[in-house]
Length: 621
Image (tube, rainbow, N blue to C red):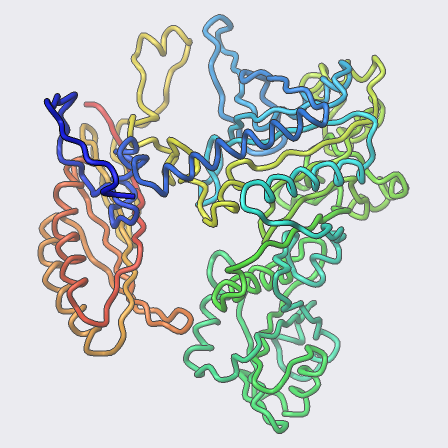
């Protein structure tokens, strides 16, 4: 304890000097995320980030110990490999020694681990870095880490049991949690009951089909819908109509994607209140409530739309169910794990007018469904499985195809000619000619597992040097241009337009001209207020800051929204500046002043901010 030991120094030697950090090195910080990422070496000094990295290191050790004890062999596979057309967009690397040709960074070591099974490495694993050039979000990075595993001479249940036990060992050693046996839920059941293939089962709110009793009543939305589906939110009939109507906006948000939301309040004593009361009687609502198992005081939320293999309406309701679970605090505590199994082998791509593999082209079909391959491909189920914990897919895999002829038929079904299949995957097809054993495996998202164990939704704190939402490393300023000499060595010529460029920012067009490094950066503050007086004071402070921001060619947009049981005041600012450094100096001062002033207002609290770059272009004259 402090004070137990006293030190009386004879001399003091200053080992090094330090500038004043751009933010306080404390457990809690209101420093902007962009600033923290720019000075990541300082951010890591903070206990939350440091502890997250220690948790990551400990988990890697637990994984290696468990798999090594189970006779798995850790084998490293190449980072420079061949680009293949299936899956996400590849990161590509030009080859200097082979002009005009490119490597791809691995999205996963899928083909290599299957070749290792042919090679006789019966149990393989590695904790491996993977790369995907796709849109980013809180739980996605362009480079991420997988626990990659494969086993020979196994069936699906062998794989599920082995890795369910591994996850159990990780959670027990890391946080002392013991799972019960994971449920095996068919994909069809998950979509029917929860509208999503990664349901959070810590709470109920099952989807209920109302199609048969709502059609033909003269309400166009229901009469033209292929599916009418509902969930019950317990106790929310007490919410005001204004508050319930806000859920209609939530349902139509880009993330959930519904065309609308219809609601019914179960008031009690056979009385109901609804957004469609003029089309239906209380007797109709009573029938709906009976099917939904809704009680007095509950709120029924309903969506209508297309049905079919794409599950668009069910998926929207499934996402809405998760959103309501979050808002009602039903997803805050505990852990629940399950396996989702029996996925469709294929899904139809309307844009490309062809069947695509739901997982990847190496997944084995269920033998009993092979009779549907040509007559009804969408009916074929895969020997595939995903592990879901708390509504998050933490891992997935399949039993693989191990026969050359079966693999050829799969490529044919996916639209590959024999020549294209040979060009892209000839190395794997060739390996299958030398006696490939039956095999299967899976991969876990290592970063995602860390975030679940650490109780966070974002994986960034668990990665030492993460990228931002634009895929940039702000600390080292990457990606960046390379010299013309390097381009010439690689036989590469870039095709970046050198004339005017335009970028949309908050509904306005901002012209970016040659010879200027230019950033349009938006920042969002979310504030909570207790009463109208606090809101008025908050608005007054904001108006004072607006004038300062106008001098920066920026603007401030304010929007009032209602979220759960609290009032939110959202302030979105977008500021144009000649460079990130200029923006940091110019925009940070007035906004910091705004935040400081808001903190002094009784009844108002600031919630963590988000900052994101809308446009960043650098061109040379």
